[in-house]
Image 1: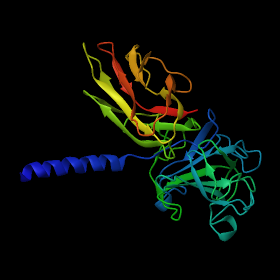
Image 2 (image 1 turned 135 degrees about the horizontal axis):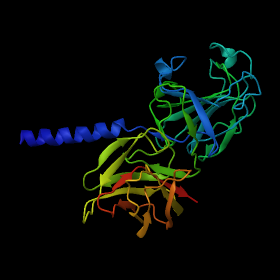
Image 3 (image 1 turned 90 degrees about the horizontal axis):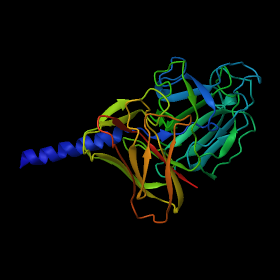
Image 4 (image 1 turned 120 degrees about the vertical axis):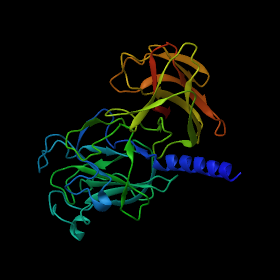
Length: 342
C-alpha cells in the first residue's frame, strides 16, 4: 500500500512540476506584421543580469542615437488584456541616458506597467517617448490597444524597447516567459529578426498547455492519445516546441486542445505547424464538430492557418479542437491554436 501511495504521490509531483515549468506566453508589443531586431535577450552581457536576466530589448537593425533612428516614434501596443497599473511619461528624450538616477526614472525612462488581472503578473514596458503614452493608470485595455510611441528615455544607448515580465507590479524582478511568436534571442545573441504576430482578442493554447496572458479562457487543457514526440522550435512558431506523430494504417491517435471561454461570442480558429515535405497533406481537424482537412507540407506567410469559426454561447461548456493524421507513413505536428474573438 505504501508503494502505491508513493507512486501516486510521485506521479502527482511530476504533473505539478511539468505545469510549474510551463512559461507564460506573451505577444510582442508591435504592429502585426512588423519586423524587429533583438539586440539583447535573456542574460545579455550588457545589462540583462541579476534581477533583469529574463528581459528583452528590441530595436530596428539600423540604430542611431537621434530622432532619425527607424525605431524612434514607432507605435507600441498592449500585448495582453489587462489593467494599466502605472504610467510614467515625463522623462525627456535624448537626455540623461547613461546610468540610473531619479531624473531618468532610475534607468527605466517612461514606462507602462500592465497587469494581467487573472494572474497578477505584470509586464514592464520601458523607454517610451516623452508625453506619448496614450493610456492611464486604472484603465482596462485589450490586447492590441495602442499604448504610445517608442522613445529614447532612461538608460539607453539608442532608441529601443525594453520589456520583461514580473510576478507582480510592485517588484521589478524579471521572470521567465516565452513569446507567441517563438523563441527570441534566449541566449542573448544579436542576430534575431522576428515578426510581430500581435492579434487583438487572440487566445492561444500551445502544445504543452501554455497560454498567453490576458486570454479569454476560464480553463484549458491539451489531451493526446498515442505516441507523440517532442520537437524544439528555432523560429517563427508558438512557444518553444511542438509535438509530432507518425501516422500508421488505421491510426486513430489524436491531439486535442480543450477550453472554456469567459465571454460568449463568435470565435475564429487558426492553427500553427512546422511545414515539411514529409507532413500529412490531409491532416484532419475537427473544429466545434465540423471537419476540415489541412496540408501540413505547406506554410503561409503569417504562419496561422485558418480552420473554421463558430458561435460559442456558453461559458460552462468545454469546446474542443481535435487533430488527426490520415496518410500512413506521414507525420502530423501539433503546435498551437489561436482562438480569436470577433
